[in-house]
Image (cartoon, rainbow, N blue to C red; front, side):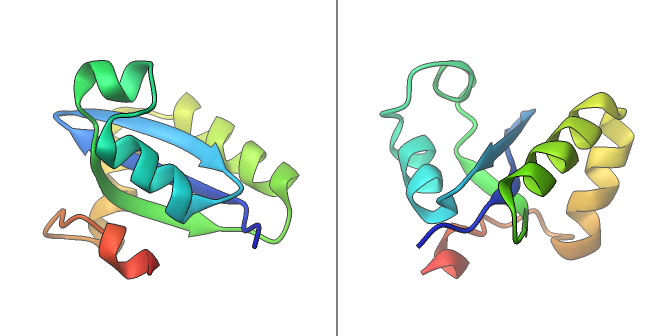
Length: 92
């Protein structure tokens, strides 16, 4: 099932991404099989996400978050996940 989502991963560095299958994408990042930024910097912890009805909405939100300052990203995360726990298990 496709569920457009925006997400933030972290391990020191924050990574903002968009996907149509959050569970699968989170697993890929978590296991390190995805080449690129998240593998290079070890961004394995899923600390924030939002789901959308349409992919264009998710992409617009991703761009908005990426364009904003780090402080705004921290506020988003801490509003729903003040202890910065890995939200991966909630996806099951």
